Picture 1: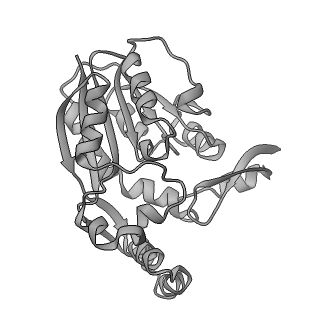
Picture 2: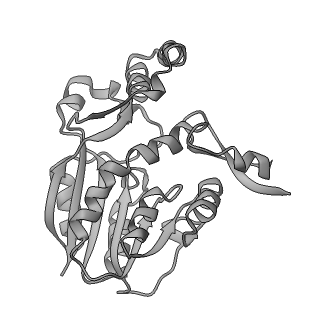
Length: 256
């Protein structure tokens, strides 16, 4: 059987070009063979802190925007949340349905329709920096949340020491898919201008492999291939670590 799904690049993030692949290729979409998918599993430890924060809330519908392969949604479902995952790429959508039996929709948030005031929680990790109209994005979320509903956003922070030192060489700036760059102040002002009340705004770290860290350094230095050769030679993708460079912000907002 052949399935129409996009093929990813070496990072695991799909290109816009679609290609027919076989079920065998879908079977090969595994953490062992896909760096980006492996990253999702590693970061469950970090993202579970979001679930800890909302654990005392009455269970309802939790929507994740840009849910990729469903790792976070799977953890939320285990804790009793009713899940909707939105993911624009078919490969991780199929993986989420097959592996975790999740309710995933293969579309973009901009094209997705849902009843107003129907969601308890909306979570979006590293999506808003890719959005062409961030205010419109936040306003749509506001309309979908029920009263006292929670929005959680995570995105790079551009008033970090890393950004100040590296400027245009900073990894997130060099990434072609990033359209908007937020400081803690500008992100806070954005959500407040859309009607949200900020209840927590923090700088967070991440769990990653030593190989991923060196890939990022290679990107900054313009020597990605040399660093990738080093990673492969010494199997550095198997070495896990937790790091807080104070360059990622997570904001918790309430609709009131």
